[in-house]
Image (cartoon, rainbow over all chains, first blue to last red):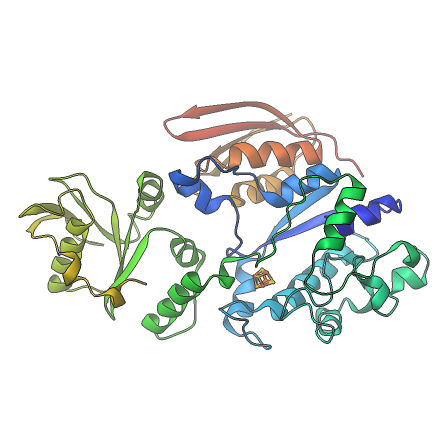
Length: 330
Length: 78
Ligand code: SF4
């Protein structure tokens, strides 16, 4: 936001590009979970663009991004976040975009030393090189402590008016925001995606180990954001809606998954991912009963819709908390 | 001038915006599109996207949990 404003103040035409990888922390979970309804559901990138008065292009990179997550050349950060590869990928895509649309250079809001993996002094040039953007990549917020780039050398931008921010401290940014008259300066200080989240990364690792291969589809990674996930057996897991919004979201997946819900008592929708035999289905039904309002009842009736089979009804005893090992919770 | 429909149901934001953006890119100014979606976030995001790009929202309605956001394509600028 600040980097863009600095360019606008130099009279440069800027348009924003936002890449959607499927892992982005955006409105999804807010939209799904009712408890978060009070929080604004705005898309941050759109909001920022509107504040700055620039156009924003949102680009779906879901498929291409898979290779970044699955095979990061530079490895992962503290969780499953391949930040350095991710930055290289995004700058490369941005570079392709500017070539196609006749733009001259790329700016990012990166600051040397701000993030442990992707914004170190020694990784900054890696991004320039591996993205192919080379010296058409300008970081206005720390340009003064980096070698001059093409836009500076050509005089398209005035290097003197750029900045020398460095390190994790955010004071200079906040001061600059104030000077620029930006009051609601919403820049995440943590990661920008779910891959930096330990719980989420754990679920993704579980998915890969259960499948025996590192692969995912958009639906898989969406579902990892929703509901309670339990893996009672290596060959199947269940996803339990935690409230109405999540149940409604999970309903959209009924055709693709074996699913079950309690009919004698109100309860959540439960999706079953994997292969399940009759014993497994019985166990899943007991779990569904446990998460329903009939959890204290002696028997609970569960309707089971097995993928590709007629629906069935099961009368089961809900599992008790003690019968559910903590390791089942993902 | 034609009227179009775009199905973005069951998609979560920002997918409905991306679909709208890519669909509108192929249309001439003045055409209208009804975007069908289910993520309430689209009620924020599609109008915001339209404001940024100079398109007009001509109406929104909600029907059985489904949303219809009607957009009139603006004249491309710069
Ligand atoms: S936190 Fe940001 S840089 Fe790191 S992997 Fe996620 S989107 Fe990429």
